[in-house]
Amino acid sequence: MVIPIHDSQRSYSAPLVVVGLIVVNVLAFLFELSLDTFTRNDFIAVFGLVPERFNWMSVFTSMFLHGGWMHLLGNMLFLWVYGDNVEDILGHGKFLLFYFSCGVAAALAQYAMAPDSRIPMVGASGAIAGVMGAYMVKFPHSRIVLAGWFIILFTFDLPAYVVLLYWFAIQFISGLGGVAQIANRGGVAFFAHIGGFLAGVLLIMLFKTRERYRLRRDLYW
Image 1: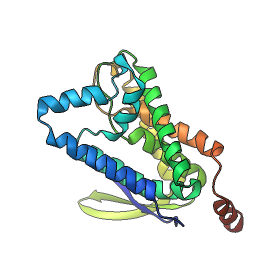
Image 2: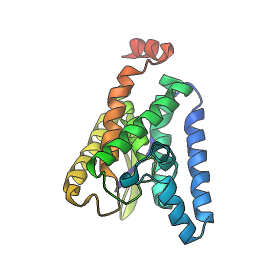
Image 3: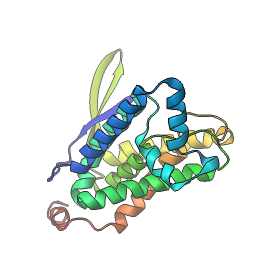
């Protein structure tokens, strides 16, 4: 297993929205932990996205809930690595709109695959997948430093497009492999990842980037 730890692409502005999203996600998870087991289950059933009783409020609230420490930390790490650069080129307000748009697309993709499921869907990974899709489009040759372990811990780097296309392929294959059981089991919402990523690829082409990013691109590309 390998995880991204940082990238080579410089940001030219403070990632205020990324930091804010991380803080809100962490606080929401700490609130979950403060609840007893039965109350927590009820809380997730209300504020998580349950496809069988779909409502728009839960589409948004589910983006701030997580199923465990590893789920939270993994999502926040990916948001930190890829999000600052996308926020940099879009600007703070537009990035927040982009993030939620990808999250909605991700939720709808998962819902479409199992509209009768009674299993709550939680997590920011669909929205973050959209950020990753945008990063691949805008910074395909940025170097992503990855950490892995096999007896010892090691690091290496690869171009962003290789890392992200590989990640997407894993989501796609895993999603197809479990499509028959998707309505009856929990686990990873692979189609939310797929939908979010594809939404990010498409939406970043529609969202106008900051002028200074376009000038840097013309200068160095």
